[in-house]
Amino acid sequence: MVWGLISYHGRSNLLRIEGNLNSNGYVREMLQPEVVPFLQGIHGAIFQQDNARPHGAKTVRDICSFRLMQLLPWPANSPDMSHF
Image (cartoon, rainbow, N blue to C red; front, side):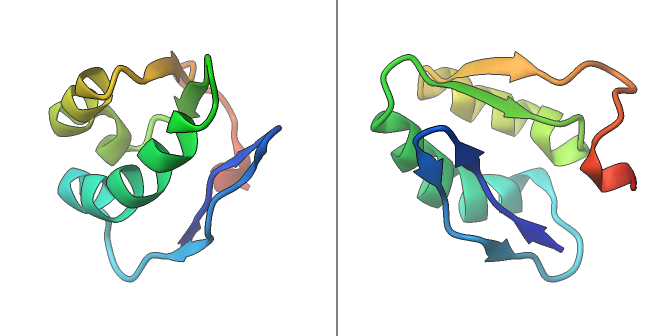
């Protein structure tokens, strides 16, 4: 599996995910090194993620809140590319 962040202002590195990803791995491998620095350079940025379990974990919500990241929740049962 691969992970990446895209926006009108650019894109992150494409990261390869080996095995299963939990919330701690998501924070350690994606949020802290990729998302936080990327969004800090964009005034008024809104971060949207799907309903994958690691994304909705308390650990992730706490990091996003601490970093004052504005989140746009993905609607429940919404189709996305990971379901095709």
